Length: 238
Image (tube, rainbow, N blue to C red; front, top):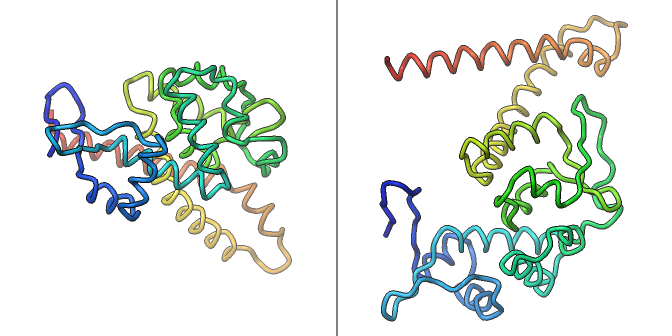
């Protein structure tokens, strides 16, 4: 069933068995997480318990954090910290983002941004949730250096924050970033093959050629995206 109130985003609701199936987990595992208070209580309708997309996102967060080596006890402490309004300055410790976990940022055109956990929360007020942090870590947007959180790209940080201020949920921004990355990787492969195939014998090596021609590739992508947006706007009519 769905909440179809016109002023809110539709929220899908699930019985326990359907929630477990959507999360790819055995029903007994979801019950165990609920008993450990890793999941918020479901909505009750008589004897029926209804779970929603927030519960599904929490289950996926638990799976992501377990994959990163966190224990269920640590995950419980993290979720309790958010639900009880604990100081966001403790996020680094709770997430296990100690020194040496992701501090080595590869060479990039992007400018990394150093942030305290409090500053990160200010960028995305009300949107710094366990689910969004797990997604950011999984995408590699966040790294850690000492007591600071490092966002790998000033441009992505500013654009993401601007979209959230415009009312786009951070979870949707992160999912869009994941999808864009798939296409960006494909375009990078295309231009790498194009540049590699055009290099004559004895010419500069491929990395130098790619670095030199990168602005041209970016201009092609930007122009094509702009024209694609124009086509979408025309299709919408006046």
